[in-house]
Image 1: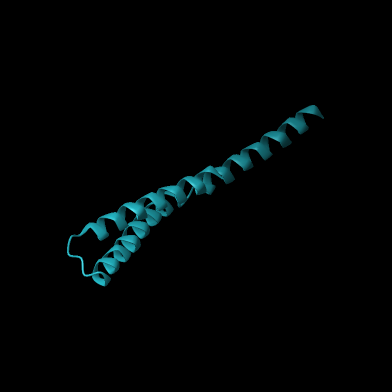
Image 2: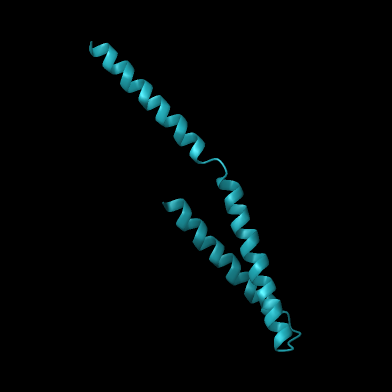
Length: 82
């Protein structure tokens, strides 16, 4: 009887480990997606601001890309900490 309980507990533990392994699938793709999307979208918004105010310095794009990367890193950390 105790051996049956041990087998049952070990089988459940093995099953939960397999499901934990699969829960991390796609994390690398999500991280890459967040970073690329943040940099591209906010860089484009910076470019639009430059066009709106007729600035030809490139600072708007650079600042937008930095904000996009920072926002993406924040979202990545928030997703991975939960």
